[in-house]
Image 1 (spheres, helix red, strand yellow):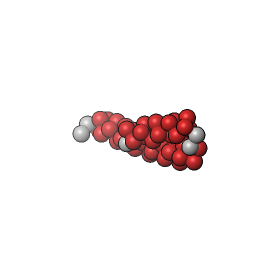
Image 2 (image 1 turned 90 degrees about the horizontal axis):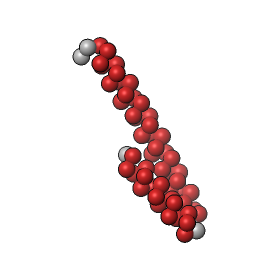
Image 3 (image 1 turned 45 degrees about the vertical axis):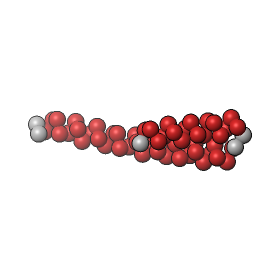
Length: 57
């Protein structure tokens, strides 16, 4: 998922440099959304891993 975030970020940067503002804004929005989803899933994974470690399983 982090890979796709970086792909959309690069697309947004290239589109912004070339003057395609609509494409740049859309790609940046998708990149932000994917990054937030990645962070949420990472935190959930971290919490469940730490919870399992403390319970001795």
